[in-house]
Image 1 (cartoon, rainbow, N blue to C red):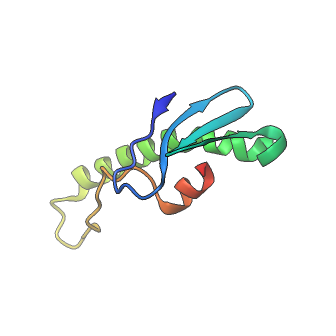
Image 2 (cartoon, rainbow, N blue to C red; image 1 turned 30 degrees about the vertical axis):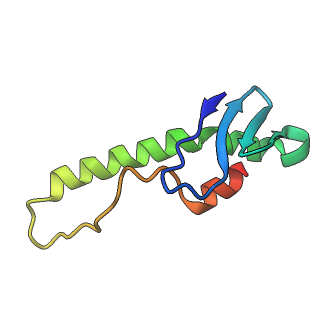
Length: 94
């Protein structure tokens, strides 16, 4: 089981395990196994990619920020890159 980094502490998820055709999610007092059969293969495959996508988007933001920070007409939105996942991402995981 990999520990889930719930930065704001409101998801109830404590860990997860990714298998070939499932994602097992541990909550405070229980766990649930999302499978191809229960959640659909496309949904499971999307959930498997979430961490990579979040990491990649953070990298892209940093690149834009570093390249554009000195151009006065350009103003980037302040972004907390250390916040783990959106509420929607957490809902997909349970």
